[in-house]
Amino acid sequence: MWSEIKFMKFNKRTHTCGELRETNIGQNVVLNGWVAIRRDLGGVIFIEMRDRHGITQVVFEPNYNLESHEQGKKLRSEYVISIEGKVRKRPEGTENLSLPTGQIDVMVDKLIILNQAETPPFPIEDGIDAHEDLRLKYRYLDLRRNEMQKNLLLRHQMYQITRKYFDANGFVEVETPILMKSTPEGARDFLVPSRMHKGKFYALPQSPQTYKQILMVAGIDRYFQIVKCFRDEDLRADRQYEFTQIDVEMSFVDVEDIFEIVEGLMKNFFKEILNLEIVSPIPRLSFSEAMEKYGSDKPDLRFALEMVTLNEVFAKSEFRVFKESVANNGIITALLAKGCGDYTRNQLDVLTDFVKKLGAGGLIWMRVKENELEAPIAKFLSSEEKENLIKKMNAEPGDLLFILTGPKLKTLSLMGSLRLEMAKRMNLILPGAKPSLLWVTDFPLFEWDEETKRLYAMHHPFTSPRVEDIPLMETDPSNVKARAYDLVMNGNEIAGGSIRIHDSVLQSKMFKTLGISDEEAQEKFGFLMGAFKYGAPPHGGIAFGFDRLAMLFAGRASIRDVIAFPKTSSGISLMDESPSTVDDSQLTELHIRIK
Image (cartoon, rainbow, N blue to C red; front, side):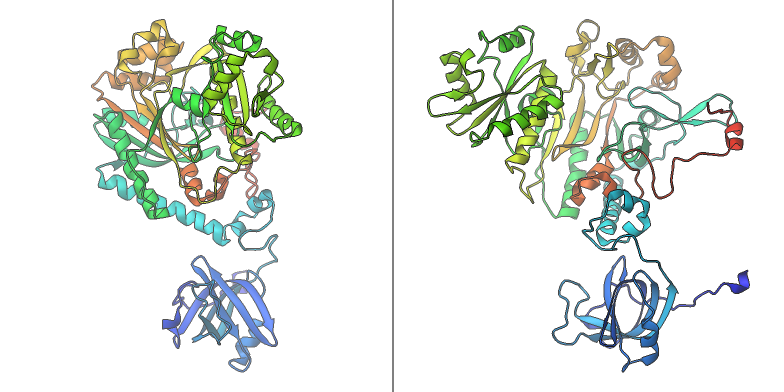
């Protein structure tokens, strides 16, 4: 009954729990917050009182105020309280230099317990050893911890930097629909059944790609949006079903214009968040260079450890594995592990198993000695080949060589994974290492899928080919380069974009190369093709993976740590137990029956 409910009256706080300093000594103050720590030392009760702004120590002393001291005996961890009291300088020797408020405390005159709390399932403090599933189940408690609140405040700061920067550069923030047409071409769509239109579905946007291009046709000229996107794909540390993008599109631009805008934003992020100056222009590598040197289209350049292509060294080799690779237009790629020549056979077997699990047939290793190469395949190599190999690799006695050979992109990717593994083993990524930024350019426009035996767009089907490569779309599509680009930070792709196709004839040619019929193109993308016929300007853009960007600036290893309410790796929200079943009546309204 309403008459039985007690509403606790409390005074409005005068300060937060992170605000008081020595300049406040002698003032009467009101604080509201949670009990973080309670200590009873010989009758005097010390409470560390917490809100999102910080911690202040408050003191219940019987000789100061007996009534408040008696009430203070009731306090336990995570009780919500309001206190009134007087700020004093802490007695000499009791200061806490680790707290901004550590020079003062508050002598309590009045205490109101606003809410009691059960004992939490894990401590509300940083650096806890609690399983992530437990933290996600009690996310509201996890988010009380200082390190988690710092992550959310960092996101907030990044939102403000983004909006301020784009507004200053003449961009317009436009919201695009969350319920849109399903156009699956890549990841799976999340589908939303329509109650009013039986048997039809909306889709949640994988990105606002078609809408932002239409905004360019509409003459908006410069668009941006901090937008939610959705992809029904397997989850991992840097991927969620729902994620946030900084979405950008510009008219009458070329690649260099996009780079200039993006690099300006990155300068602001680094300066305002990390107080670091980054040099522009940001270095660039073509897709081919990145793959051959680092085995990845998102290489981590915080350490060198470059891969070396050995096709020339073994061009005339009689060693069957190398000979077949060269003959089949494959690649022979090598990695030099400096000073690792003393690796044991067991260590080498572990690394061999590592690449085999990734799909390699095996791993060739060689120890560099004073006058020889020690390796299981050494007897198959000529003296000239050994000599040229050592010279090509700049190898010295005590070094270790790894070689992989096979189909080009697959083999380079495998060696790229081994490169990262060796960087960890050799401690090449030092704590506090300077962040590494890189543009990767000149991607292939298409990639071949062996399973479906068809071409797919490496980025998306609206990416423009290089003008000089357009004739190859019909004769040699595998050699067509895209006007596409990715921005990479510390081995993570943080943004990707392209100059778009703005001509309906070229867009039709793109669909044809992808095996999309005229009927299918009209069904999926007819609204966009129709818009192009009414005067589409040349345009291009980019989208940042905001969660991943926030993760990197926060120094975390998982995007779940910078998202308030993430899903587990199996796509479950442990806190509110979604996904969940729904009533049969709801399904009936949506014309759905579950078998």
